[in-house]
Image 1 (cartoon, rainbow, N blue to C red):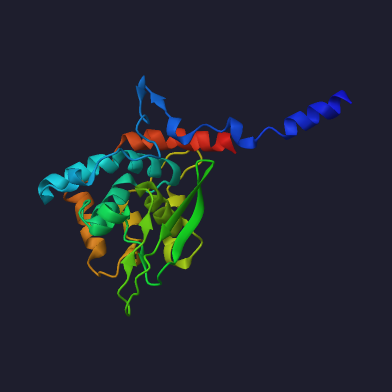
Image 2: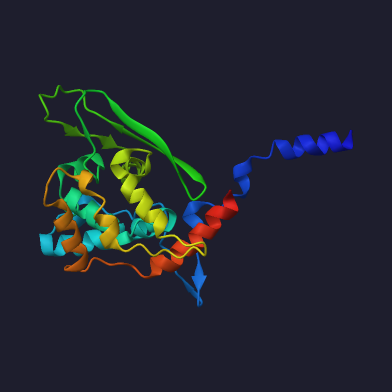
Length: 241
């Protein structure tokens, strides 16, 4: 009877109780916390913070989204510079109405009134859900409107789910990221081979050139700290499983 009670007690303890909160993940390298900002939460900055002139808005936006870029690279291997570049181009560095009014960073569009864009994605051993809603107004032809998300984090989740779902459009991206991972957990993929697989993200034939130019010429941060952070988060992800 004792062993039966013990078995029942162990059975009802939720498996997730020992999984670390993703907002608390950190990695100390040479006494420096490389991942203290690598959290699945964007700093709270009002729309007025992005309303400056372009030359001012871009670095402000980059710094704002940097913690999320660290986290995304940490759990997916997607270079932080690619993530920042795509977010910046899609939202015009925080100036688009979709970003300001709908918390929609990556231009997720809808064409059917009252439709939803929702799903669930697992990151570092944790499941996150997102939901975007479409307005009630009628649309005409191919003129869509942006989905509205409750938070900008949910917009990021929808973007990641789109990139990492099992579809042919981004199979090359997924394979490139896998090739960049060695058994010891070192991430090798740079922005060039990864960004070249993202042509389907935009209908603009100049998109890839714009993205790569932003990263290489304008020097969007590659964020070296994210490399150490990635190894740490990968290890924690394995521990959580």
